[in-house]
Image (cartoon, rainbow, N blue to C red; front, side):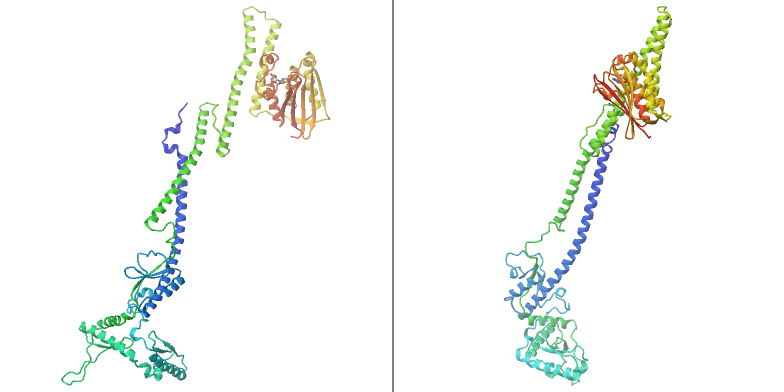
Length: 609
Ligand code: ADP
């Protein structure tokens, strides 16, 4: 067998289809993974951002609320209800711990796994302004009032004065004015629309002055601040209730000169000393500083993958797995696809090399299965044609050899003087030449028909007339062998056909029938119209044809008994010629037979073709 040329190429080229299939499916899966990942990342990012924003708002809310408690209580005892309520409101677990992470308060029961960093440090004297809002310079929560908190009596006195001031403002200027209470319990009048100069007319000395509590607290604070300033070598100051400061006027110098401008303390020291002083003064009034943890309720995160290194490795693993499965499935599918194609290619090459018996195995009814099926059908047909061609050549040689060798034998014998060239010899030679002529004419007819060059000269004619002509032509021969020939026509059918060719076709059938019918038998030529068809039958009561031979009678050079038929003048080409002639008229011919009883050959022609 010739080597498969594809085997000489590299393994990549040999697996071309498989590699391409693999490349396509890997490309498709990479694209789909990338697209999916992009979509997921996009939507997750948006979701995370929203969640982060919400989480920040919740953290700030919790922080502010706890800061409020710390600013107004000296201990966390009793804050549990506040913490539980807060946790319920924000939907998260709220835990407070000391600096060394011992739990002080927890909204939920059960063990808590604290995050690495706390959400915030709850320390009202050092407020995280990023979370709580407010000015970054003053980090003391305004709710921490400590010693400035007014007792009820002072508060009531001030409130009365405030109510009077508000009434004065409302009545004198028809202004909106209302009394609001500050964190220390000191009331003040809020009148957003009123001009401050006009408001001064309703001024109240009680409201503007300090209460004894405030005076005491402020004195204490001033002491602390001035001590601080002194440590830093700065002159003392006096403080207002709103922690504004003014320098203390310097004592008159010994020379009796008027008091000059007071010495200005370095501006930077005062605010920091005020902060330190306030811190020192308020520290005993606030709850101890705690760490705040706002964590999700229940067991940890519920996602399978996150963006941690482990999560990323897991994502990479899943992607690799998907790709591996894709590659595996594609290779499997590709191998299954390529294997029958290669078998087909191999078989086709075998056929090209002349092995007409090459076939492929048909597996399944898919496209490739059907292709293999079609290939096998084509191979079978080719094998048949090849056999037919071989048979035909040998048959033609055989057919021609016998009469030729007869003629040569007679001529050699005459040349040698063994036979006299008399009349009998001449008629023998003539008979052999006629047989040769017959075979050659038949072959010619077939060749013309095969080439599609059979030209028909159609004209309308009566079928009865045609059958009578054929019967008359064969009657002599039939009478000679004692066979009765009859013509039976129903109605007056007519057809447009080539009279010579149609006569030749029916003549061949009648000649066969007469030859294969023993003496005393009958041959009937019948004709009738059946629907749109004209049916011509040649029926005999002859030897018949066996069922296994029947499908072969229209093959070229096929004869039941070769020697006998040749002797009776048959070439094995009569029936193939009949079929060609009938098909040229657009009709068909078939045979039916019962061995020992006779045969019926039927020609069907379309009446109007
Ligand atoms: P041939 O020239 O040998 O008759 P045909 O092609 O006409 O060749 O016929 C092929 C073979 O079919 C014949 O050799 C014969 O064996 C068989 N055959 C044809 N017609 C009949 C028939 N009417 N009765 C029996 N056998 C027949």
